[in-house]
Amino acid sequence: MTEHTFGFRTRALHAGGIPDSATGARAVPIYQTTSFVFQDTDDAASLFALQKYGNVYSRIGNPTVAALEERMASLEGGIGAVATASGMSAEFITFAALVGAGDHVVASAQLYGGTVTQLDVTLRRFGVRTTFVPGTDPADYAAAITPETKVLYTEVVANPSGEIADLEGLAEVAHAAGIPLVVDATLATPYLVRPIEHGADIVIHSVTKFLGGHGTTLGGVVVESGRFDWGNGKFPQMTEPVPAYGNVRWWANFGEYGFLTKLRSEQLRDIGPALSAQSAFQLLQGIETLPQRLDAQLANARAVAEWLDADPRVSYVLWAGLPSHPHHERAQKYLPLGPGAVFAFGLQVPAGDGGTAVGDDGRVGVGPPDHVPVLDGREAGRLFIESLQLASHLANVGDSRTLVIHPASTTHQQLTIEQLEAAGVPEDLVRISVGLEDVEDILWDLDQALTTATGMNR
Amino acid sequence: MSETWQGPGAQDRLRILRSTRSIAIVGASPNPARASYFVATYLLSSSPYDVYFVNPRATEILGHPVYPSLSELPVVPDLVDVFRRHEDLPGVLAETLAVGARTLWLQLGSWHEDVARDAEAAGLNVVMDRCIKIEHARFYGGLHLAGFDTGVISSRRADR
Image (cartoon, rainbow over all chains, first blue to last red; front, side, top):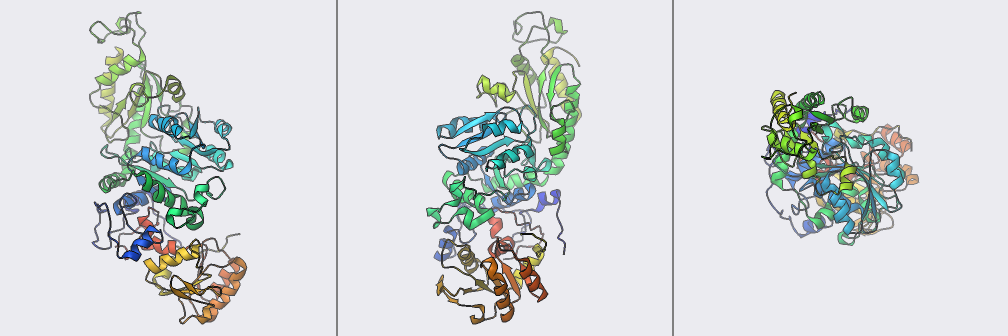
């Protein structure tokens, strides 16, 4: 008998959310409790020895959180998932499971600033070295791999360059070295690309962004494919006995379920960034409408990108949905619905009369270009951001509302000049996360702010 | 191993688990690090099944008696869960047919196309290369609670 395969929209609503057996509650109940009573001492002993599945303590697992975990695993096509308090902690528990002092990570140089500092500062202080590789050529990543390398790490859609990772090429490089390809797919979500289908072994999300989708709640998740050979000799932590759990071996005893069982039973237990039940409920509410929201946000993003691209006051638009973007073809391959609703653009700094950066009153008035003092990119970016009325200036992406930020002074400000260069963040660059508003209103807002910032009408 | 044999889908595996009352673990080990021991602790603590152990070289596992062969069990088990080497599998099938069990279940990593075809021709349900602990946990909530994808989409209340 052939089995029916349920579609993405159906699974976004139903996966992990079977009605509760006791009450029949249709929505996923919020299990707001730290702990769960044992049936008896045998029950407790079996649970602690991982001999049976069940609830013990909400730092390790919680039924509301489990619904989110299964839903994300289903949408990504992974074997399972572990949810965390934020995207950053999802990354940290993954690195904590895979590397230790003396180990090495090969990562894209075009990562979110917090990920760069987690690797380059915190983990480096713990004795883990990271080589950051510019660009997306798999050969450059292969060249950076050493015998100590345990992880190849990238984002699917780089921010703010809009470059698209060559997932299949990177998977080949990683697997030739016996290491997993770990992919942050936050800006894409599983609706746009499922990296496991292209060879990735572990997918990480900040669920805070498009998945939750409403800018209300922090969360993260780690999804694993269940396909990586953790018994290949490079990961003794997966194959050696674990005294705390009666000398089980994660790989020998749990097989394809071993990595996530370890991640939950060791890293979530020891490090502690559990997702709360309340947060899991709110994020699940968001995921239910992910496909519908993203369809609308992509349509708005396309309209905004094309409008900006045609505007003389804008020097460049870094959205791979535009034919002019160097990764347009790759974006069509990996993200056929569109490369997300977050992208960056640059302000055309007007050619001026050689005067000072800003007028005496600290402001720049509207007027023909040759009457506007020369602005540097940073100042033009500031003026643009401060002139917006609808788009919100804040440090997030993936809200239902349109958001803007000036990375050089916010998300990427902790990077050195060299890292800024490698990350492709010029000073005049503005990042936009296109929301669900009427697109005419988003364009009106951008238009009036561009006029103020550049002194030019469209 | 060439895989031309098609195993039962999710709904059929659930039907097998629902119609099963007793399970014999053939090749059961008293070693806590072995997969069969993990399956046994799970089935004893988390399932409604009567569990019997078969191993000629063991006498007691988890406080339960161990029988030298399927034919020496005090009951006819509904399901025979096999943890034996590949070359031993035809012999286990012969014993399974001799006692009259209804389902032959070969553990994760165990795959024998000839045995599967012969067993099906004799009217048995056959499952191969799957863990009965994982499959039970898939349909009865354990796998879900541990954050794994069960593949189950349903608007009906979960089985308890």
